Image (tube, rainbow, N blue to C red; front, side):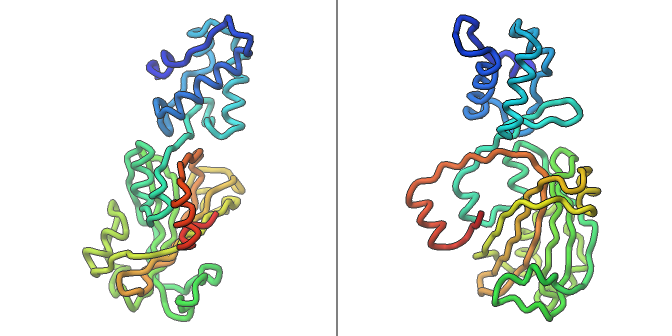
Length: 262
């Protein structure tokens, strides 16, 4: 945190207001990736003392960055939200495990439910999905530095993954485990991203308030033989600001493959 403190610069001789200079200095550090996702920011008092400015100026600067979703506050402490992802994130079925690693956090996984059940009607989003057959549901919590960041409900056709409900996949990315156990290699898929209010059950697991705005991603993946691997629904309250640089050919690729929807 001291390193971040030393990097925040202002010039009191400028006509630009102090609060705006502080906010812009922090933005520049975020965009240059000198401050990473979930880095703890200096306290308002510490930054005011370091810059020799009014506490109100720092408070207003931080408030501006919170409104822009570049910072978020937890228990009076401010953290960075900014994440820079390559456009590959949109072209590939990026594992949630790897996304957490890209945030600079240590990922861990815990499976809290394994059962044979029916596929929820709202997840039958593809003509190739048969909602009448039994599915194995795996409910997993994904942690970053031991903090619960996301919940994933995964539905796998039972006929394709016999015995999977008795297996332990904790601490392993799911697709890696499926490849080594069943020879299923993920080769294609689709992903639908939306913003939803956090349901009560998920809020309890994520230590968040009910109806908190959350990211929901529904994914459908297929193996090398075009057979369904899984339908999954993940939900997360991870506060993050994504910046992705796309070239024109990247945008054409997304439009052609219909792979990622916002």
